[in-house]
Structures are given as C-alpha cells and as structure tokens.
Length: 154
Ligand code: HEC
Picture 1: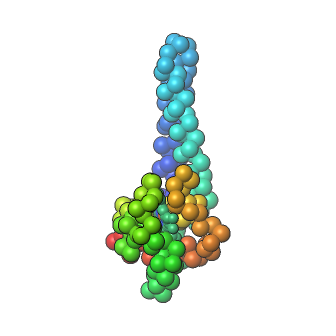
Picture 2: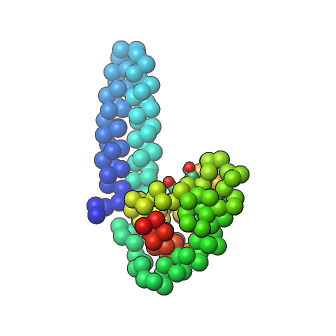
Picture 3: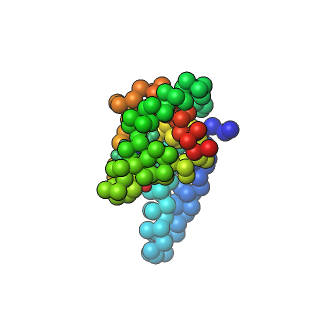
C-alpha cells in the first residue's frame, strides 16, 4: 500500500491549484468565482492537515493482529466503544438514540486504512460525541482496537 496520507496530499495539491486559479480569476473579474477559490483553498488546507497527521503515523500497523491482540481489542471495544457503536459496530449502542450526529456505523470503515482508524480513535471527531482516546488508551491499546475493528467489519 502507498504511504498513508499520500493520496490526500495529492488531492490537496490539486484543490490548491484549482483554488488559486479560481481566486486569481475571480479577483480580477470581480466575480463570485473568487469565493469558490477561497473555499477550495480552505478545503485543501484541511486535507493538508490530515495528510500531515497521517504521514506522522507508522506506515503500517505496528501491532500484529494475533488472536490475543484481537481479544484485547474486543475487551477494550466493549469497555469504551460499545455503548455508542453497538455490539456489532452498527452504530446502535444504548447511548446512540440521544446523539446527533448518530455514532458511525463502523462497517463503513471497512475500507479505511489502519492508520486512519487509529487517527480517528486518537483524535476523536470534534463537533460530534466521538471522544479522543489519546489520554484514555495507550498507543498499543488503540492498535489492538484497530485490529479488532478489522475483524468486526470483515
Ligand atoms: C459517546 C459516544 C461514542 C463513543 C464512546 C465512541 N464513539 Fe466513535 N463515534 C461516535 C460518533 C457520534 C461518531 C461520529 C459520526 C459522524 O461523524 O457521523 C463516531 C465516529 C467514529 C469513527 C469514524 C467513522 C467515520 O466514518 O469517519 C470511528 C472509527 C469510531 N467512531 C470508532 C470508535 C471507537 C473504536 C471507539 C472506542 C475506542 C469509539 N468510537 C467510541 C460516538 C462514539
């Protein structure tokens, strides 16, 4: 697999080029195209941020998905995630009904690279109930959870 974050970096570059072009054209023509350009640039900056954070992670999951790791991940999942994401990761835990947005159906993360799952668990998702587990779980524990999620969403 290519280095995590590389595809995002390419996308960000493309958006930045388009954005700069639209901004330059829009400013010269005094057109609303300038706003589109500004929006593209802002989106590009968001992608750059995520690409850099992904790029800093180990390119591969450093914790082998042994049966023991998966079991540890399962225990941690039941302790920390199930209340929202549900026993099978469908986003239907007991706390889910009260949350907006609803907890993600984790089956749709089946195609995420391990590093992106790790980043979501580490940072949480600001603006949603998804907590950051940076201080709750050790790095190794977060990789165990990733190994378990891989089994859960197979
Ligand atoms: C308090 C409720 C809550 C808990 C506890 C929780 N989550 Fe979440 N989770 C959410 C919500 C809400 C979202 C955001 C859904 C959205 O953005 O639509 C989310 C999103 C995610 C995503 C991102 C999915 C995507 O499509 O980008 C992942 C991965 C995830 N959670 C994994 C976990 C794991 C693993 C744990 C336990 C270590 C956990 N969550 C604990 C509520 C929770």
